[in-house]
Image (tube, rainbow, N blue to C red):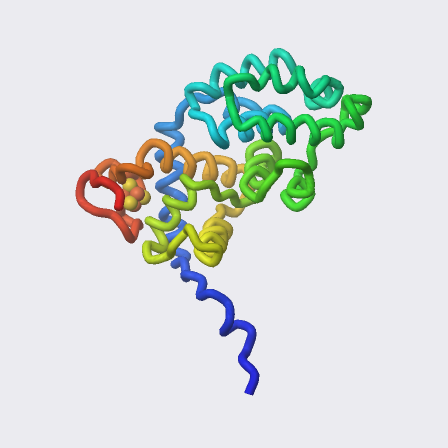
Amino acid sequence: MTRSRSRTRPTEPRVDAAAARAFGRKLRAWYRRNARDLPWRRTRDAYEILVSELMLQQTQVSRVVTRYGEFLERFPTLADVGRARPARVMAAWEGLGYYARARNLHKLARQVTAGGQSPDAELPADPVELRALPGIGAYTAGAVASFAYERRAALVDTNVARVLKRVFAPTVNIKTTSGARMVWHIAESILPRTGRATWTHNQALMELGALVCTARVAHCGRCPVRSVCRSAKPGDRVAP
Ligand code: SF4
């Protein structure tokens, strides 16, 4: 007897639709009242969003705020990066570390703008097309699609994975491949209906992970989603 294919797949945690809706409502309402005013949240320019996302991958927000503005002053458009010598892009990245990000940005800019010769060329809006570009992984593709183009696209970084695990799937090990896949599945299944609401939803998820449900401490006592969270405890607690 042959086994059915579905039996060999990891079991995906079921997300209760009502809990997901309540989570989304509370999360977005909290974000509207508590969001930090960060420069990349004031733009829908795909290139500017991409620069911010690449910088934020390994660098603290406070440091990125300054360097982001400086980088955009030197390279106002993607074509400006595509036209520049690699050494100039590296110099503008100086101090941020993880230079592979700058190298990939340069490669991507050259590819999309034909070495700066197509100044109007734009980054694609489709996450699948974005992922085909140098240095763009699943998270960054979702971030550019959602934050620049207001696409209804999911995104999962370490902050988001931690929040979704704690709220919906406390027993899932997000460090395994199957656990990471489950968290992506949860992220996709709880997206709001519109791209515009998804923009707020995704920003809010990341903000909650950065300010309330942090890696070190879960501030459950002041968490806006504690009534629907499966890991909620009274007060704050050092995260396990
Ligand atoms: S209730 Fe606690 S564990 Fe749940 S999301 Fe909020 S801070 Fe994190």
